[in-house]
Image (cartoon, rainbow, N blue to C red; front, side):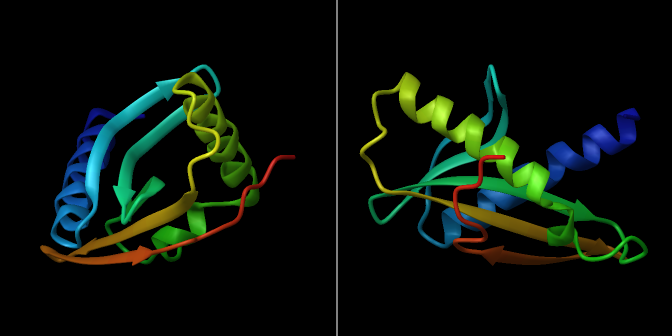
Length: 123
């Protein structure tokens, strides 16, 4: 991945975290690496742990950002989240998966939070 794409991704994750904070989420961790994958943002929302996948696009040329959260990606995120929960003895806590979709087109950001974007999915 090119440096500019990495920078765009990191900027988008920071933008998403700021947006989530304004919506009342408490950010617990960013870019959390587990042996089974990376979690962009781990947050808490009204007592529920939220594993957030951030997807950003600079145009609609390849579709909407949230379309990139495929079934395979959902399975990877589920495994990473379960690993994170287990490592913190938090398997009994309520949890969900949200997606933050950012379309950064022509200098403006359209940010959308999709709560409960997908169920636990293990292939």
